[in-house]
Length: 215
Image 1 (tube, one colour):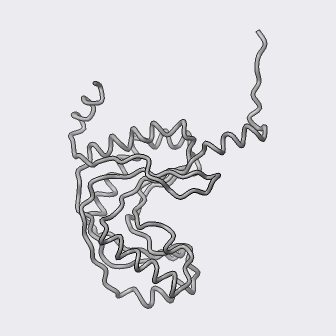
Image 2 (cartoon, one colour; image 1 turned 45 degrees about the vertical axis):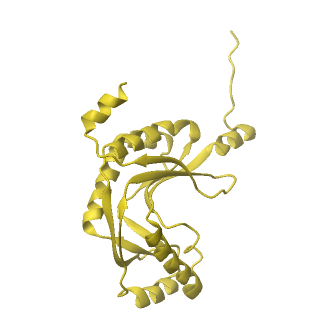
Image 3 (cartoon, one colour; image 1 turned 30 degrees about the horizontal axis):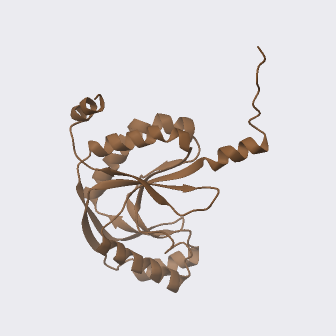
């Protein structure tokens, strides 16, 4: 029987693969009042300090990001659903501003909420990381410090000026978190992120979720 060889290095094959490599972002959003408040601060940063990467994204907290072929994302979706089913809704509390020296200012998350978020991320990583390591080995990231970004990729001058003026400013907000959202965008077309899945937080016992998944 004649064998058939597929040249994975052929330009048409590489183009086809790239067209199906999508960026996925798992997030917590926020309520409309908090979203409007954060957005106004982001717009101010763009006007006052010239931060190009301030108001370009809707306020959100990224739990996980990966670039993966669309045919391999079902296992990721399954893991997100499982973690959401066994995670209870909680109160998100935002408290003040902080910065990373690499050029980012953000709204900080209070310790109780931060702990709950990191536990969700830990469970998510436990469930899907083996799959992610196999199919998105160099292009994935998990949340390690919960926050809502104000501006990123700031120059040293922009960051120094903004931090001098904002480090003692008050920011306080709280809202109920009831779901995770999975967003997706094409790497080729340059589209904006679109919501493709919503995962309600239900707080079910792990055993109950496993039993339900069998039927």
